[in-house]
Length: 93
Image: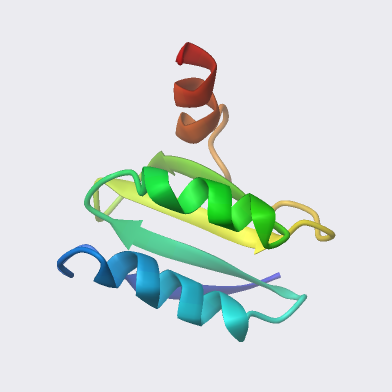
């Protein structure tokens, strides 16, 4: 799978959400989006699932978080650190 990288770490709200959603409109079936973010975008998770995307959140190397997003029908991208921070947080709630 080809990685498309999007850095939203310096954008004020709601720009990170808007930029991510715009990028997903043109995301190919053989691509995944890796987003560099300063925090976990908790409001993004439900819209991703509702629109047919899978995601994984982990501590980033450059920014606080890396969010990996891909089409549900595709296999997950290689190199993900498990377990997902989003999954861990949702289980704790």
